[in-house]
Image (tube, rainbow over all chains, first blue to last red; front, top):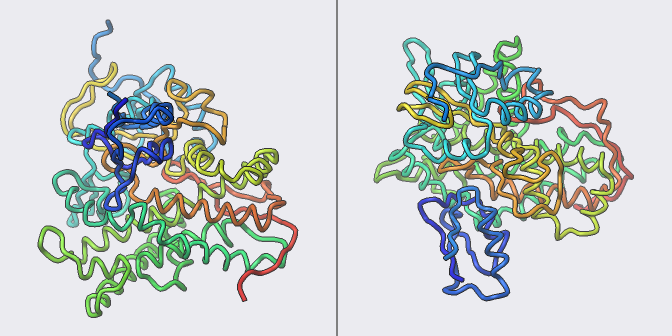
Length: 63
Length: 416
C-alpha cells in the first residue's frame, strides 16, 4: 500500500495525523499534511484507511 | 430526472439569528436534509441554505464560484458580501473575507503563527492561565465556568498572542462576545457596537506603538514590522487581521468547553470514563466539536450561475453553510445525534472546509485540552446549575452560553 496527500485539497484538518501519526506529518509552516513513508507497513494499513475515511476534503489518496 | 427549476424554490423560514432557531436548529436541519436539502430563506435580504454535508463541502471547496470578499461603500454605509449574514461591521476580516489570489498572500503571511508547532509552544502559557484562573476560585467551591474560566483562558491566550495588554482581556472578550450574540435589532446592540469600536481603536493604538519598537513575539508587532508581497502591512490590514483573530479566538473555544462541561455533568458515566481514560481526549475533543459546532455556519457569495442538486443558484445570490447541519448528516455519521467520545473516523467540518478552514484550530485544541484536563483533575465532582445558566439568545454564528454557575468540593491553590 502507498498513500499520498493531494496537496491541492489538503487544508490542514489534521485528522489523518490523528488516525496514523506514524505515517503522516503536519507542516510547521501551515499545518498541512504530508506522508513520511514510501510504502505503508502492514501494521499501519488499517490506520491509513481510517485516515482516508476521516478526511473531509478527501485529500488522502491510497494507491 | 427532474428538470432544473428556475427561481428560488423550496422556501423556508430560516433565520440563524432568531430565538426560535436557537432551540430548534437540530430539528429544522433534520427536516431540511431529508425534504429540502438546499432551500431559500427570504430573511436578511434572501439567501440559500445548504443543509447536507456533501453540498456544504462542495460549495466550500468551489471557492472560485462561492466567494468571501467583502466591500464597504462608506458614502452610503453599505457592507456587501463577506462571510456573515446579515453582513456585520464594515471591517473586512483578514484573511477570511478575501478570495484568491489576494487570499494566498494574506493567509500565507500568518499561517506559520497558527501551525501545530506554534500552537504547541503556547501550551505552557495556556496551562498557566488555566491554573491561575482555577486558583482564584478553588478554595471557595463555586465558580461561574464562563466568567471565571472558559471565557478568560482563551481571551488571555488571544491577548498574549495579539500583543494586547493581558489586563484588558475582559473588555475585549465582552465586546467580541456581545457583538456576536446580541440580535442586531436589540437595544443593547448599539452599546455593543461602541465597545467593538473601542477594541478596534485599541488594536490601532497598539499597532502604531509596535511600529516604533523593535519587533516582539506577538501578532500586532509582526504586522507592524512584516511585509506582504514586498510592501509593509497597512493599518487597515492589521486591524482586519486583528478583528478576525479576536473573533475566532475569544468565543469559539469558550463555547465548546462550556457545552462539554454541561454534557459531562449531565452524563456522569462519560465524565468518569474521560477521567479514567485520558487517552480518549483527542477523539473526544473532535467528537464534541462535531456535535456542538461552536461556529454554527458561515456565508458565501455566488459570483456565477451554479447548478447544485435540483437548485439553480444565480450570480449575486448569497448562501449560508451551516457546519452544524453537515455535522449531523446521517449520510456521513452513524447516529449523528449521539455523542460517542471514541468516534473515529470522524470527518467533521466544525472548523469549516475548503481553503478558508479555521486557521486557529490547533490553538483551539490546545486550549480545550488544557482547560478540560485541569477541571477534571481539580474539580472532578463539579455540579452545574443548568437552570441558572443562559444560552446566547442568538446562536447562528456562535452557539454559546452567557453564564454557567457551578459548585465543587474545594481544593488547594497550585501557584504561590
